[in-house]
Length: 322
Image (cartoon, rainbow, N blue to C red; front, side, top):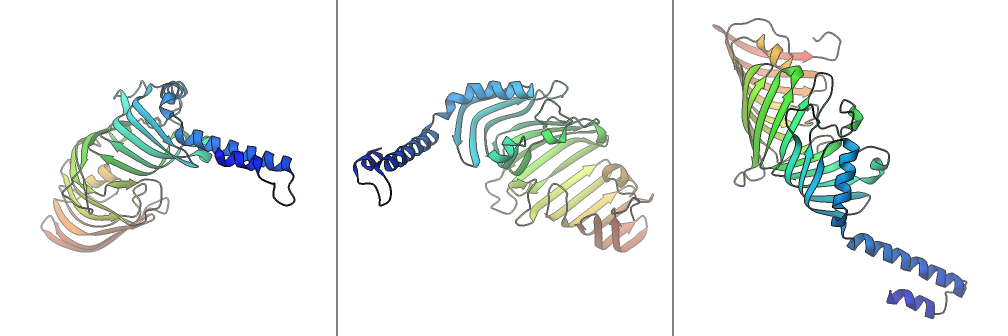
Protein backbone atom coordinates (compact mmCIF):
# COMPACT_ATOMS: atom_id res chain seq x y z
CA UNK A 1 0.00 0.00 0.00
CA UNK A 2 3.06 2.27 0.42
CA UNK A 3 3.58 2.10 -3.34
CA UNK A 4 -0.05 3.13 -3.88
CA UNK A 5 0.33 6.20 -1.64
CA UNK A 6 3.31 7.35 -3.68
CA UNK A 7 1.03 7.58 -6.70
CA UNK A 8 -0.87 10.40 -4.95
CA UNK A 9 2.29 12.42 -4.25
CA UNK A 10 4.22 12.14 -7.48
CA UNK A 11 3.67 14.24 -10.58
CA UNK A 12 1.28 12.54 -13.02
CA UNK A 13 2.79 11.15 -16.27
CA UNK A 14 2.83 13.38 -19.32
CA UNK A 15 -0.68 13.74 -20.77
CA UNK A 16 -2.42 12.50 -17.61
CA UNK A 17 -4.17 14.77 -15.15
CA UNK A 18 -3.69 14.45 -11.40
CA UNK A 19 -7.31 13.23 -11.09
CA UNK A 20 -6.69 10.45 -13.64
CA UNK A 21 -3.50 9.48 -11.83
CA UNK A 22 -5.36 9.28 -8.51
CA UNK A 23 -8.11 7.15 -10.11
CA UNK A 24 -5.49 4.80 -11.54
CA UNK A 25 -3.77 4.59 -8.16
CA UNK A 26 -7.09 3.72 -6.47
CA UNK A 27 -7.75 1.03 -9.10
CA UNK A 28 -4.29 -0.47 -8.59
CA UNK A 29 -4.82 -0.42 -4.84
CA UNK A 30 -8.16 -2.21 -5.12
CA UNK A 31 -6.66 -4.88 -7.40
CA UNK A 32 -3.74 -5.41 -5.01
CA UNK A 33 -6.19 -5.68 -2.10
CA UNK A 34 -8.39 -8.20 -3.94
CA UNK A 35 -5.38 -10.32 -4.88
CA UNK A 36 -4.20 -10.28 -1.26
CA UNK A 37 -7.68 -11.30 -0.05
CA UNK A 38 -7.84 -14.18 -2.54
CA UNK A 39 -4.33 -15.40 -1.72
CA UNK A 40 -4.61 -15.17 2.06
CA UNK A 41 -8.34 -15.80 2.54
CA UNK A 42 -8.99 -18.35 5.33
CA UNK A 43 -10.84 -20.78 3.06
CA UNK A 44 -11.51 -23.23 5.87
CA UNK A 45 -14.22 -20.90 7.24
CA UNK A 46 -16.28 -21.90 4.17
CA UNK A 47 -16.14 -25.59 5.06
CA UNK A 48 -19.49 -25.60 6.87
CA UNK A 49 -21.41 -23.62 4.21
CA UNK A 50 -19.86 -25.75 1.47
CA UNK A 51 -20.84 -28.96 3.25
CA UNK A 52 -24.45 -27.75 3.47
CA UNK A 53 -24.54 -26.48 -0.14
CA UNK A 54 -23.28 -29.73 -1.70
CA UNK A 55 -25.59 -31.79 0.52
CA UNK A 56 -28.59 -29.64 -0.49
CA UNK A 57 -27.75 -29.72 -4.20
CA UNK A 58 -27.20 -33.48 -4.41
CA UNK A 59 -29.66 -34.67 -1.77
CA UNK A 60 -26.81 -36.70 -0.21
CA UNK A 61 -24.75 -36.00 2.88
CA UNK A 62 -21.38 -34.41 2.07
CA UNK A 63 -18.79 -33.39 4.66
CA UNK A 64 -15.22 -32.13 4.71
CA UNK A 65 -14.35 -33.39 8.17
CA UNK A 66 -11.08 -31.60 8.98
CA UNK A 67 -9.80 -28.85 6.67
CA UNK A 68 -10.45 -27.07 3.37
CA UNK A 69 -7.73 -25.32 1.38
CA UNK A 70 -8.05 -23.57 -2.00
CA UNK A 71 -5.51 -22.20 -4.48
CA UNK A 72 -7.63 -20.05 -6.84
CA UNK A 73 -7.17 -19.68 -10.58
CA UNK A 74 -9.03 -20.42 -13.82
CA UNK A 75 -8.07 -23.97 -12.97
CA UNK A 76 -8.44 -23.97 -9.18
CA UNK A 77 -6.72 -26.51 -6.92
CA UNK A 78 -8.72 -27.72 -3.91
CA UNK A 79 -7.60 -29.92 -1.04
CA UNK A 80 -10.01 -31.62 1.35
CA UNK A 81 -8.52 -33.17 4.48
CA UNK A 82 -11.00 -35.83 5.48
CA UNK A 83 -14.04 -36.21 3.22
CA UNK A 84 -17.21 -38.30 3.18
CA UNK A 85 -19.89 -38.32 0.49
CA UNK A 86 -22.97 -40.51 0.84
CA UNK A 87 -24.46 -42.73 -1.86
CA UNK A 88 -28.09 -42.46 -3.01
CA UNK A 89 -30.56 -44.33 -0.82
CA UNK A 90 -31.00 -47.12 -3.39
CA UNK A 91 -27.29 -48.06 -3.36
CA UNK A 92 -25.97 -51.04 -1.46
CA UNK A 93 -23.00 -49.17 0.08
CA UNK A 94 -23.79 -46.19 2.34
CA UNK A 95 -20.93 -44.06 0.93
CA UNK A 96 -19.72 -43.18 -2.54
CA UNK A 97 -16.46 -41.93 -1.03
CA UNK A 98 -14.67 -41.86 2.28
CA UNK A 99 -11.03 -40.74 2.16
CA UNK A 100 -8.21 -39.44 4.31
CA UNK A 101 -7.76 -36.66 1.76
CA UNK A 102 -8.83 -35.60 -1.71
CA UNK A 103 -6.95 -33.10 -3.84
CA UNK A 104 -8.24 -32.03 -7.24
CA UNK A 105 -8.14 -29.39 -9.93
CA UNK A 106 -11.42 -27.89 -11.13
CA UNK A 107 -12.00 -25.74 -14.22
CA UNK A 108 -14.08 -22.67 -13.34
CA UNK A 109 -15.45 -21.77 -16.79
CA UNK A 110 -17.13 -25.17 -17.41
CA UNK A 111 -18.43 -25.04 -13.81
CA UNK A 112 -20.21 -21.74 -14.57
CA UNK A 113 -21.84 -23.55 -17.53
CA UNK A 114 -23.04 -26.40 -15.32
CA UNK A 115 -20.29 -28.94 -16.16
CA UNK A 116 -17.96 -30.43 -13.55
CA UNK A 117 -14.51 -30.96 -15.10
CA UNK A 118 -11.65 -32.18 -12.92
CA UNK A 119 -8.35 -32.35 -14.85
CA UNK A 120 -6.80 -34.27 -11.94
CA UNK A 121 -8.00 -36.04 -8.79
CA UNK A 122 -5.79 -37.62 -6.10
CA UNK A 123 -7.32 -39.73 -3.31
CA UNK A 124 -5.50 -40.94 -0.21
CA UNK A 125 -6.82 -44.12 1.44
CA UNK A 126 -10.21 -44.00 -0.32
CA UNK A 127 -13.17 -46.31 0.29
CA UNK A 128 -15.30 -46.25 -2.88
CA UNK A 129 -18.82 -47.59 -3.42
CA UNK A 130 -19.65 -47.63 -7.14
CA UNK A 131 -22.94 -49.08 -8.38
CA UNK A 132 -24.78 -48.92 -11.70
CA UNK A 133 -28.35 -50.11 -12.23
CA UNK A 134 -29.94 -51.54 -15.38
CA UNK A 135 -31.99 -48.33 -15.81
CA UNK A 136 -28.82 -46.22 -16.02
CA UNK A 137 -28.72 -44.91 -12.45
CA UNK A 138 -25.18 -44.72 -11.11
CA UNK A 139 -23.83 -43.67 -7.75
CA UNK A 140 -21.10 -41.42 -9.20
CA UNK A 141 -23.64 -39.13 -10.94
CA UNK A 142 -23.64 -36.10 -8.64
CA UNK A 143 -27.01 -34.49 -9.41
CA UNK A 144 -30.34 -35.54 -8.01
CA UNK A 145 -31.05 -37.38 -11.30
CA UNK A 146 -28.43 -40.14 -11.14
CA UNK A 147 -29.45 -41.54 -14.55
CA UNK A 148 -28.53 -38.29 -16.36
CA UNK A 149 -25.07 -38.69 -18.02
CA UNK A 150 -24.51 -34.92 -17.82
CA UNK A 151 -24.37 -35.23 -14.02
CA UNK A 152 -21.29 -37.46 -14.22
CA UNK A 153 -18.08 -35.46 -13.56
CA UNK A 154 -15.41 -35.51 -16.26
CA UNK A 155 -12.21 -36.70 -14.58
CA UNK A 156 -8.88 -36.49 -16.38
CA UNK A 157 -6.13 -38.16 -14.31
CA UNK A 158 -7.00 -40.23 -11.24
CA UNK A 159 -4.32 -41.08 -8.67
CA UNK A 160 -5.14 -43.40 -5.77
CA UNK A 161 -3.17 -45.05 -2.98
CA UNK A 162 -4.04 -47.72 -0.44
CA UNK A 163 -7.79 -48.04 -0.71
CA UNK A 164 -10.72 -50.32 -1.46
CA UNK A 165 -13.40 -50.36 -4.13
CA UNK A 166 -16.77 -52.12 -4.18
CA UNK A 167 -18.30 -52.29 -7.67
CA UNK A 168 -21.85 -53.51 -8.38
CA UNK A 169 -23.27 -53.76 -11.93
CA UNK A 170 -26.62 -55.51 -12.04
CA UNK A 171 -26.78 -55.64 -15.86
CA UNK A 172 -23.64 -57.82 -15.86
CA UNK A 173 -24.44 -59.67 -12.63
CA UNK A 174 -21.24 -58.18 -11.19
CA UNK A 175 -20.31 -57.73 -7.54
CA UNK A 176 -16.57 -57.16 -7.15
CA UNK A 177 -14.40 -55.93 -4.28
CA UNK A 178 -10.90 -54.64 -4.99
CA UNK A 179 -8.02 -53.59 -2.75
CA UNK A 180 -5.15 -51.53 -4.14
CA UNK A 181 -2.02 -49.74 -2.96
CA UNK A 182 1.22 -48.24 -4.23
CA UNK A 183 4.21 -50.60 -3.86
CA UNK A 184 7.22 -48.42 -2.91
CA UNK A 185 9.59 -51.20 -4.06
CA UNK A 186 8.17 -51.33 -7.60
CA UNK A 187 9.83 -48.22 -9.04
CA UNK A 188 8.11 -46.32 -11.84
CA UNK A 189 7.00 -49.15 -14.15
CA UNK A 190 3.98 -50.81 -12.45
CA UNK A 191 3.75 -49.31 -8.94
CA UNK A 192 0.01 -49.79 -8.25
CA UNK A 193 -0.87 -53.36 -7.27
CA UNK A 194 -4.45 -54.61 -6.97
CA UNK A 195 -6.37 -57.70 -5.89
CA UNK A 196 -10.05 -58.23 -6.78
CA UNK A 197 -12.61 -60.91 -5.93
CA UNK A 198 -16.32 -61.37 -6.51
CA UNK A 199 -18.62 -62.33 -9.36
CA UNK A 200 -18.82 -61.28 -13.03
CA UNK A 201 -21.74 -62.40 -15.23
CA UNK A 202 -22.76 -64.55 -12.28
CA UNK A 203 -19.47 -66.50 -12.40
CA UNK A 204 -16.89 -66.53 -9.59
CA UNK A 205 -14.27 -63.91 -10.49
CA UNK A 206 -10.81 -63.04 -9.20
CA UNK A 207 -8.01 -60.87 -10.54
CA UNK A 208 -4.71 -59.43 -9.46
CA UNK A 209 -1.89 -57.55 -11.09
CA UNK A 210 -0.23 -54.17 -11.43
CA UNK A 211 -0.77 -50.91 -13.30
CA UNK A 212 0.66 -47.43 -13.57
CA UNK A 213 -0.02 -45.18 -10.58
CA UNK A 214 -1.98 -42.50 -12.49
CA UNK A 215 -5.15 -43.64 -14.28
CA UNK A 216 -5.91 -41.28 -17.18
CA UNK A 217 -9.66 -41.63 -17.66
CA UNK A 218 -10.98 -38.98 -20.07
CA UNK A 219 -7.99 -37.19 -21.60
CA UNK A 220 -5.53 -38.36 -24.26
CA UNK A 221 -2.62 -40.37 -22.89
CA UNK A 222 0.82 -38.85 -23.36
CA UNK A 223 2.26 -42.37 -23.42
CA UNK A 224 0.74 -45.89 -23.35
CA UNK A 225 -0.61 -46.99 -19.98
CA UNK A 226 1.05 -50.19 -18.64
CA UNK A 227 -1.13 -53.01 -17.34
CA UNK A 228 -0.57 -56.51 -16.00
CA UNK A 229 -3.46 -58.82 -15.13
CA UNK A 230 -4.06 -62.38 -13.94
CA UNK A 231 -7.80 -63.10 -13.96
CA UNK A 232 -10.10 -66.10 -13.50
CA UNK A 233 -13.83 -66.04 -14.33
CA UNK A 234 -15.66 -69.34 -14.03
CA UNK A 235 -13.54 -71.91 -15.91
CA UNK A 236 -11.73 -69.24 -17.98
CA UNK A 237 -8.34 -67.83 -16.98
CA UNK A 238 -6.36 -64.98 -18.54
CA UNK A 239 -2.83 -63.71 -18.08
CA UNK A 240 -1.89 -60.56 -20.00
CA UNK A 241 0.87 -57.95 -20.02
CA UNK A 242 0.88 -54.87 -22.21
CA UNK A 243 -0.32 -51.33 -22.65
CA UNK A 244 -3.46 -49.32 -23.46
CA UNK A 245 -3.77 -46.00 -25.28
CA UNK A 246 -7.15 -45.24 -23.63
CA UNK A 247 -8.52 -46.60 -20.36
CA UNK A 248 -12.03 -45.31 -21.15
CA UNK A 249 -12.40 -47.17 -24.48
CA UNK A 250 -9.62 -49.82 -24.24
CA UNK A 251 -8.50 -48.46 -27.63
CA UNK A 252 -4.88 -48.96 -28.59
CA UNK A 253 -4.61 -52.21 -26.65
CA UNK A 254 -1.26 -53.92 -27.26
CA UNK A 255 -0.64 -56.98 -25.11
CA UNK A 256 0.68 -60.52 -24.98
CA UNK A 257 -1.72 -63.03 -23.43
CA UNK A 258 -2.29 -66.60 -22.27
CA UNK A 259 -5.91 -67.80 -22.33
CA UNK A 260 -7.23 -71.10 -20.97
CA UNK A 261 -10.72 -72.48 -20.54
CA UNK A 262 -13.25 -75.25 -20.99
CA UNK A 263 -15.08 -73.77 -24.00
CA UNK A 264 -14.35 -70.76 -26.25
CA UNK A 265 -18.11 -70.07 -26.40
CA UNK A 266 -17.93 -69.06 -22.71
CA UNK A 267 -16.20 -65.84 -23.83
CA UNK A 268 -19.51 -64.51 -25.14
CA UNK A 269 -21.01 -64.49 -21.66
CA UNK A 270 -17.86 -62.98 -20.17
CA UNK A 271 -16.79 -60.35 -22.74
CA UNK A 272 -19.41 -60.34 -25.52
CA UNK A 273 -17.28 -62.00 -28.24
CA UNK A 274 -19.20 -64.69 -30.18
CA UNK A 275 -17.12 -67.84 -30.72
CA UNK A 276 -18.14 -71.45 -31.49
CA UNK A 277 -18.52 -74.29 -29.01
CA UNK A 278 -15.16 -76.00 -28.51
CA UNK A 279 -13.43 -78.56 -26.31
CA UNK A 280 -10.95 -77.43 -23.65
CA UNK A 281 -8.29 -75.05 -24.95
CA UNK A 282 -5.00 -73.36 -24.00
CA UNK A 283 -3.83 -70.51 -26.24
CA UNK A 284 -1.29 -67.71 -26.25
CA UNK A 285 -0.72 -64.84 -28.67
CA UNK A 286 -0.67 -61.09 -29.11
CA UNK A 287 -3.76 -58.84 -29.18
CA UNK A 288 -4.16 -55.27 -30.44
CA UNK A 289 -7.16 -52.98 -30.87
CA UNK A 290 -7.62 -50.02 -33.18
CA UNK A 291 -11.11 -48.51 -32.99
CA UNK A 292 -13.72 -51.27 -33.46
CA UNK A 293 -11.21 -53.85 -34.78
CA UNK A 294 -9.46 -56.41 -32.59
CA UNK A 295 -6.52 -58.30 -34.10
CA UNK A 296 -5.05 -61.43 -32.54
CA UNK A 297 -1.75 -62.56 -34.00
CA UNK A 298 0.91 -65.20 -33.29
CA UNK A 299 -1.77 -67.58 -31.96
CA UNK A 300 -0.27 -70.82 -30.67
CA UNK A 301 -1.84 -73.54 -28.54
CA UNK A 302 -4.16 -76.51 -28.39
CA UNK A 303 -7.88 -76.91 -28.96
CA UNK A 304 -8.94 -80.27 -27.61
CA UNK A 305 -6.46 -82.74 -29.19
CA UNK A 306 -5.56 -80.41 -32.06
CA UNK A 307 -2.73 -77.91 -32.41
CA UNK A 308 -3.89 -74.43 -33.32
CA UNK A 309 -2.07 -71.47 -34.85
CA UNK A 310 -2.73 -68.45 -37.01
CA UNK A 311 -4.42 -65.07 -36.78
CA UNK A 312 -7.88 -63.72 -35.96
CA UNK A 313 -9.60 -60.38 -36.59
CA UNK A 314 -12.86 -59.27 -34.98
CA UNK A 315 -14.54 -56.18 -36.48
CA UNK A 316 -17.48 -54.55 -34.66
CA UNK A 317 -17.80 -51.51 -36.97
CA UNK A 318 -20.92 -52.91 -38.69
CA UNK A 319 -24.34 -53.86 -37.32
CA UNK A 320 -23.33 -57.51 -37.61
CA UNK A 321 -19.77 -58.09 -36.28
CA UNK A 322 -17.38 -59.85 -38.67
